[in-house]
Image 1 (cartoon, helix red, strand yellow):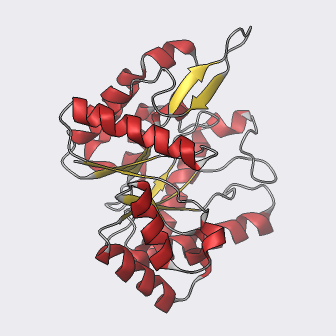
Image 2 (image 1 turned 180 degrees about the vertical axis):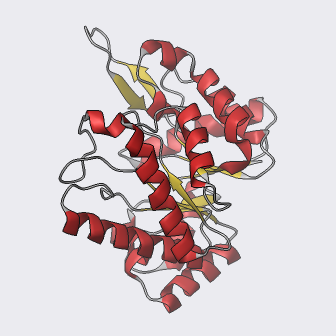
Image 3 (image 1 turned 120 degrees about the horizontal axis):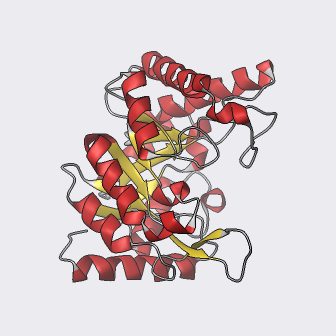
Length: 286
């Protein structure tokens, strides 16, 4: 079974620390899954427990809690701070009952480094350091529920299903999971039009580890002399969303499919409506 989720409007920051309001808006959007509200990263245990109670009562699955600072920052004091905050986010996610906590592995540079290109991001020690970080986080939290995950990203060594499967083996922890964003692995037109193959390889290699999936569409910018792959509202691009829905529905565990990166509430509503239409056409429960 799948369940759809995404951001709420107004955005989290405008809601204050009110899980009741957050849950109401999520259900109004038509979601069954949510992102962990950002304020909970700095919340006390009683606030986290209150949010968990509300979300469970309302039947909302907390798909993921994210922390998006660079875990490989080349400045030792910043790297240490970011890893400590990553650990705190993981502890919060476990207390909240989120399926997973997620970040990118990071980049060998100063600052967030989202688009920093470096040969070091593909060196053998890159996945080795990623595996050690994951073990350290998991061993520190000792989770009973929430898995630690990394997001797939084309700018680093975690840029294929095969690389993710290798990392799962390297980490060797029950609570290391897989966070899937298959559009992040599209680096050429060939992969855009063969997206179903990327999904198939993820399923074959680590089906039982998949905990949260970002569902996005893409389009190729034309005319363009070099490849530019842009995100699009689901149903308004060329990604094989039907293949994604069918693959996730066939998994033994319920998987949240989370919309993201759109700018307006109307875009999320259009995308969600199209995804639900595709699910209905293919007899998929959501």
